[in-house]
Image 1 (cartoon, rainbow, N blue to C red):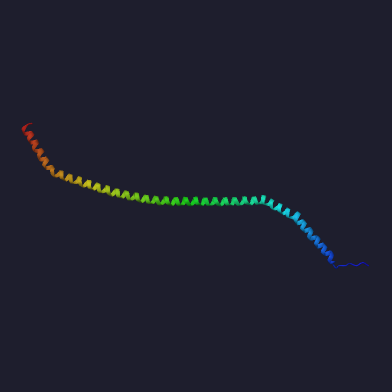
Image 2: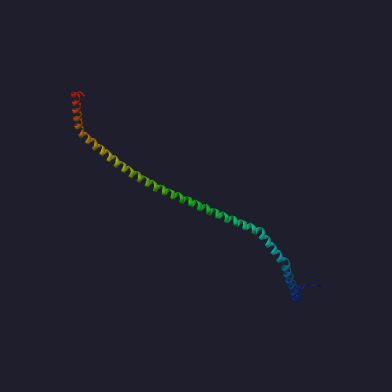
Length: 145
């Protein structure tokens, strides 16, 4: 009867392993490497460009955000500077107005005092003028001129 021999033959096994390695090297060299190279190039040209485009869009968004932030910072700085200048000029204006009011008040008081003194002086001369006019009127009415 026939029986099954499960003991491997080392010579046959060595030849089969050798053929497998040789076939694997041929398949790798002539089929697998060119295919992987072609697939990598295709991925670079399609997916790679998409990834670069997405990266560039992200960078543009970041730059736009930075520009908007710097514009907002500049606007805030300008507003605070404007408010500071406005407060300073308002305070300076009030100081100028107060100084002008004080100067005007002093001048009005000086003019009022001068007018008051001139009125007092003229009142002291009034009796003299009245007596002169009375004498002239009396002389004119008595002499008949």
